[in-house]
Length: 173
Image (cartoon, rainbow, N blue to C red):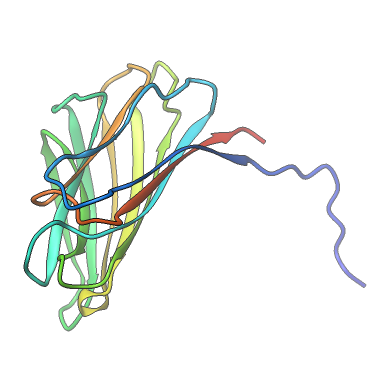
């Protein structure tokens, strides 16, 4: 005997755009002209910093080209060290780390909740890197009520070739 669910509907993820970096670049990856027809946004990627060194490389998210009004807290974990936490405010929303160009690709996922509403935007992201089996988990907000129409992803010294990001719109259930 099993459990039967009725009238259960799930949110729908619809791909908006995918971008793969064709060759090493110092430029950010930008998704623009994001339609305001979804409830939330989901961003997923495999990334590698454009830096000829191994180890963790930082990267950041900026919304609508706006370099202010971000605050966030996070947790670093993995490797040989104990987990550590941090809290910050700043000009960009620090997203985590990726592997250096000489290493494997890292995974990255983020959600921007209520991106089209006239309220403060909440961001939630996590990433994992094969460097020391480490990762980062970050939650934060962008203290702005504007609809999110663009998202920029900045890698430390840019992005290596074949870094790929996909932006999804989430429709309400």
